[in-house]
Length: 283
Picture 1 (cartoon, rainbow, N blue to C red):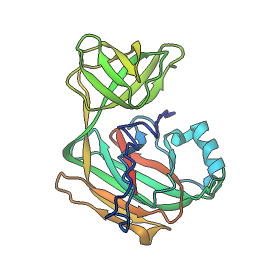
Picture 2: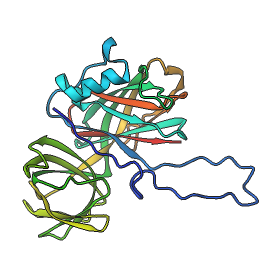
Picture 3: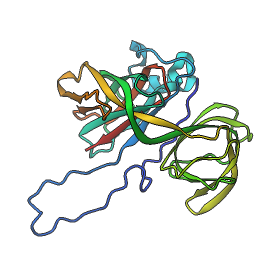
Picture 4: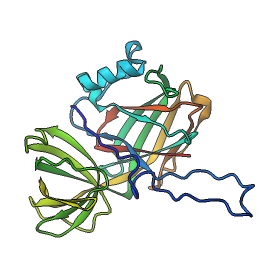
């Protein structure tokens, strides 16, 4: 299934929102680390095929781009991300829609573009997440009749009947097209204020511009994602740099990786039995 995922990397309050701080006279000898909010790096649906490990002919960025565009055998589910230059370490978390059993496995690849357009990819390791019971702040609902405006991360959605609100994280298109007014799929929210009315249309405030009847919710309740609390890391070429926490007590599992000069990240969800998200943060 072809996956469409939109990330607005500089959106205030959602992604890289951070204040610029000038060290005071008593702070100039202190090392300051850039602190970035969590980003949704990959959005994966349990429906359809999942991709297999990259073959030798796909271990270059240009060839991987072709495979993703072709979307054969689940390759459309592969996500890529260019790492900000200030990120030397990465943290990984996962959420999915099934309590205490949902499982998503990600194969992680790294490369170094160095300002260029091509790089070799190296298999860095595998992250095997299983969900616990702790609620996250991420929600999902199916939609139909989408068009012609494409919801963007950070847009504020309001139900025309219920008056309930939520903030868009991303959308996944399963059929139709936004331009044709018949887009259908799932839309992911955060900071929901309540329950939407069944089959109501929604409007969107996109940075001060109102878009009416953008889409129709196909269900009344937002499905709540749960944090993964169990994690198994299988290190590969970057093995010595991995560390992880797997509490298995309904709190939050997390992995950490020294990217070692890499600036291009690939997440390949090889197993997915519940709609899931891979979250990353860098420092």
